Length: 304
Image 1: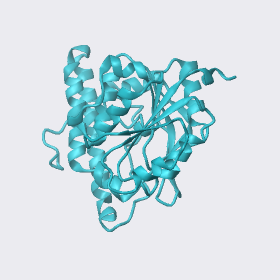
Image 2: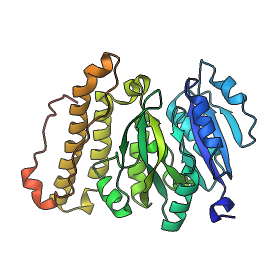
Image 3: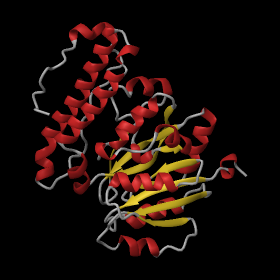
Image 4: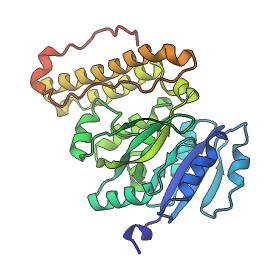
């Protein structure tokens, strides 16, 4: 018996009108090599056949929860509160977990004393064609430092979280929807360790409905506000030059995302999906000494 087999975990998957890809998502979980988990499917005000699809499975690990308070954050929080496992895996209703994801992710967290762990991910389209891959940082100290200004380092849907994290820092906040995970990870940064297992174990599906909900100028503005508020609340932890350095990087990353969004919006409107959104180049060589050469805009050109 593997040491991970002795650990009981929970899988939390909110569902809202997910009939198109739901079976594929459910079966990718049920076929995992690690099996000692409960599967909490939180049905959240669907008007399609999602409930019927869920009820067609007889696997005793599945627990269908009907959440009548409609909203993604409410559904996630219901799942987090109901979870009985020591570890909680997150999964979206339109994505695919690779066969050994749970086993490898759990073993990696135990061996490296990690509290919140993502994976490298593959981006797929609605026909399961591979578009590209993302390989975020692995080292906990790197992630902790860069989370101050770059919240793309942990892909929420691929994450496994120790249950105790929620009871120490609280749950997701509705006011930050649909980027409540950004606020959660910043709060967790204070006392918990992060990492990404350096292996592609999750396929994240990219489609028009998803893009129209997540990628908007309003959400980029909200992301910037979350990061700036967090940094301001901890200003006394930094020297003035360090504070300005991180503030500059927050503007750099969020403004770059806005430009990428504006450059690609035409393709989205025309019913086409861009192959990928270009993210900021590596800035690992930038140091605090470079602050004087980085300008902090007083008014964003994109009118966020």
